Every structure is written in structure tokens, then in C-alpha cells.
Length: 511
Image (cartoon, rainbow, N blue to C red; front, side):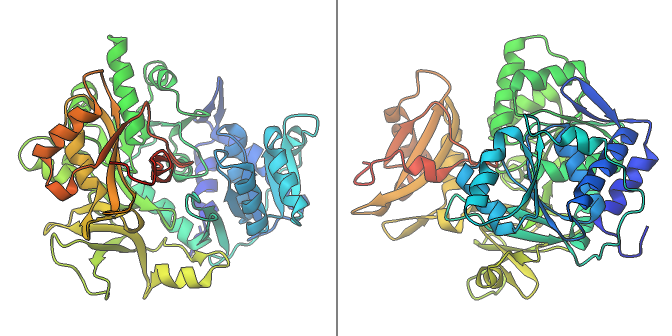
């Protein structure tokens, strides 16, 4: 291995080392590490024939599955720049990403070719390798002569252009280098505590956080099971039938998993060792339920597309409900081995313990910048530190507590209100299954606090929540309105979509 490794070095080494072991299960088909190695080298040969070299952007418009994993490995082998496109985005957003990234080739499922054609109609000129349908080129790619001598790749070459969700304005392309992605993989191997004996189940979109976990699972020699989407019954079956031991979920998925496990009555979760989650803390009552059902398996991560996925980690041992556990549980943990986190004031000076400011972070896998956006890059990256746009505070013992996104902080009657504080208070109420809080424009207050509640039973009403809030919250932090919903909308990356929630409210006077 080179003195300054690139991403593929760790992946190709594992493919060779574990050649006879099961590597990937997608649907009913299982591939060995040797199978993946051969298939990826064949697809790499096809892509090289299309002009793909080190640093060449290659867009992927593929659902979770074997084709995604093989293409991902092929791109890494060539040292090209992966442009993963979340299929939950609109065709217009997908076409924008293809055009903006200047993708030379799109590896695309037959149902997604319209996005490529739309990009072409706007002047983009990518080639297209289609999976399925009348134009299928995938089988030919798998039959291509495999590449054995891989091309030279510089650690400074771009390895990934990962687009943000685009909930406000057009998505931004986050550029990562080969060196950064190699370091990022090492961080995952340290922090995930994943072993070669684990079976890692991935059900969320591989173009986002799950894709980094995929690389870690393969580098470690684990078996990776990929589902096209999250289906709670399929997850339970994978745990019982395939002995899945390591899950990656967001809290809303965990809540559905708990409800489904209870509904089954008899359920064997003895294989389950880790449930890694992100996006938000778990509500305490639900965590207690999870600990009773599954044991001490929970671990939380915090990161961003600009520094994925580990800036902080809340360990299994931190998930305690007794003693001072409640205080720790509202945090997202402490800085991981390969990062440092600080909270700063607007002037850049460090905040004291408990003082809210902007979360900043340093890591060797922080992005190179936003593609074609120098001013936004300069705002986000200052003196080597990533300014995350998250508001939070550190405790004296280094636990990071997030309170809001800067753009989501509610200013009502001239006072600052952090949505997480209101959400935590309302989540403790009986009958509240899920909750999200947002500010909407109000003619008198500037912004009014609106709570969106997913009730667990018919006892919960808007009036009962408002009445309970009077004892749980200071007057200026109480919701002016409560909206009962069947489910909280989520973005393409699984986070609660507060923009969509605000759109449900009359912007005149929600009270």
C-alpha cells in the first residue's frame, strides 16, 4: 500500500484478502468478495473505455442493490470522482446535478434515463451506461475484459462530489479528495466498532450516509446486506433469518422497528449487536423501550456531508437512562479520534461550557469546498475549521448538545427559541409518538412556534398538547399552534423536512 493511500487501496486490499467470504447480499443473491472484485474490474474496464480516468466525474442514478455496489467499487478502482444521486430527488434536481458536476458518464437505471435526457437538453453531454430496459449495457459491462493494472491516482485528486439535499435553493456539490476519503474510511473503521463477523444491514439510500458505511463494511470483511428501501417487516426478517447484527437507522425508523417488534410478539433479536443512528437523538421513552427489547445496542453519530459521518459519537455505554444518563442522552456524544469540535461565538471566540454558539469542526476528511462556489466555501471553511451551521453547546466533559440549525432558530417576540428544546419537552407527553417544531411567519410575533405532532392514540388533541405545554415550557417557548399529522415528512436523506411542515400552515396567523 502506498505511503499516502487513496480510497481504493483499502477496498481492493479487502476484496483480495477476503475473496472467498460472503460480501454482499442484495435480494436473494449473495456475492463473495471475489465476485465483487471481478465484476467491479469488468465495469471499470467498460468505464475506462468510455474515457473515465482519475478524477473524472461519474454520476450514479441507481437504486440500492448490487449494481450500485459494483459501480461504486469500479469508480474507486479507477480513482474517478463518484457523483452519487439520491433517487428521491426530483428529475429537475437530478438533471441539475448531472450538469453541474460535469459528469462524463452516467451509470443509470432504465427508469432514471429521463433525468439524463433532461440534462442533455440543457447542454450537458454525458455518456450513459444503462442498467435494464432495451438499452441495457450492464451485462455487456460485466462481460468486459477486467482491468488488472489500475491507473495511478493522486491523493489530491477529487474522489467524491456529494450533493446536499437542496431543501433551500439548488443543491451544492461537496467536493472530497482521495486523501480525505481514505482518512474518512479509517475513521469509520475506528468508530463503528464493526467486525468481520458482523452482518451490516443497510436500508437507507447509499448515495448518502449509508454509502460510507458500505465502504467500511467491505473494508472490514463483513457481510453487507442491502435493501432497496426501508421496510420494517423486511428488517425484522433480516434480523431473524439472516442474523443481521448491525443496523443503520434514523430515529423515525427505530420507532417503527420497535412498534413492529412489539406487534410480532415473539421476536428473536439475539443477533443484534449495534443500532447506529443519526439525524437526531432518540426520545428517552423510546430509548428505554429499545433497551428493554434489544439490549445496550445503540450508538449515535453526528456529521455532515462536508465531513461525513463521524465528527462526534455517543457510545453504547453512554446510552443510559439512570443517574446522569438523561443529560448525556440529549447530546450527540464527544469528538471522535480523528476530529475536534469547538463551539464559537459570532466573532470566532470560543464559547464557555453550556454557552450556545455555532458548532465548528476539524478533521482530515473535511471537504475541499463547494463545487464552483468560492464565496460559500470561504464562509464554511475558515482557518481550517468547518463552520457547520449548527447551533449547540459543549458540556465541561466535552459532550456536544445540538439545539438547532442556525436557519431554523425561531425568533418570537424578539426572543430566541431552539426547536430541539421544545421538541424534547413535548416528546415527554403521553400519547406523543413523534414531534417536530418549526417557526412560521406571524404578523405580531415575527415568528410563531408551531408543533407538529404524530399521536399514538386518539387521546391526544391539539388542545391537550397546548394545555400540557403550559406546565412543561416557559410562556415564550410554548407553541402558538399544534397540528396533528399522520407522519412527519422527510427530506431525501431522511431528516424531518421543516420546510414542508411550514407549508402546511396558514402563513397569516397560525394562532
